[in-house]
Length: 297
Ligand code: GLN
Image 1: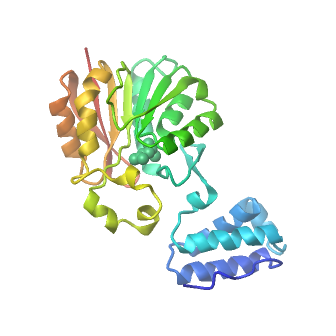
Image 2: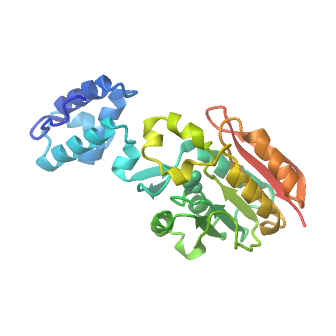
């Protein structure tokens, strides 16, 4: 382990940056240049432009402590978002803690799919009702409520600690009046009817969790990752109830690598009031990431 007892106090920003770059590079973290810059931005609160301009200024004792603590955590592969306690998703900021999954950019594909459907079926002013299963930080429901000014929604999570974070995030993002919460694993006890059902459920097969990158395995909550023996347990559960909870509307689910066809099959076979066949959407990395299906009365 590289030296993490380093004292940054009184060092110039550029000296601290050089030290961080070589320390992060020695720990084989990807892109040590960028990481060093982000750590200093975090500790100083400076913008990237200010950072370049103030290259010579010395770090204060409190900035030095923040950097030392942040780099120590980063060297243990803790994601920077967790060190900061927040993550940007679809242009908004979400508080995160150890109780919730770190929102991922690929989940924005699910948001785009829902918004495309809304745009094509009457527009964003409609008073839609939305249910988000396994809300975690609340990023999916909150983003949709923010994008759809007359929508309201219910978020569930099995974890009460996660629901506490989602409640903080609805406040911070100004949609608290249109959101409610229920502690539940999936749709048991949830009646609806809703126009839209969304979920990014835990979908990693239990035996594969040990092989995940340490930044995921050690920091995302197991409850948010573990999808049972084949990773599909929650999809089966959701599909069993989805048709009655969404009598006429949209079901849109995020899926893991290689799961799209199987999840589409589960929806096709379980949802009696389906309208047509499921379709899929690809994320920015080219992976099939979302499976969606319509229902009708
Ligand atoms: N809905 C949250 C997200 O997409 C949490 C998902 C989860 O915990 N599996 O980030």
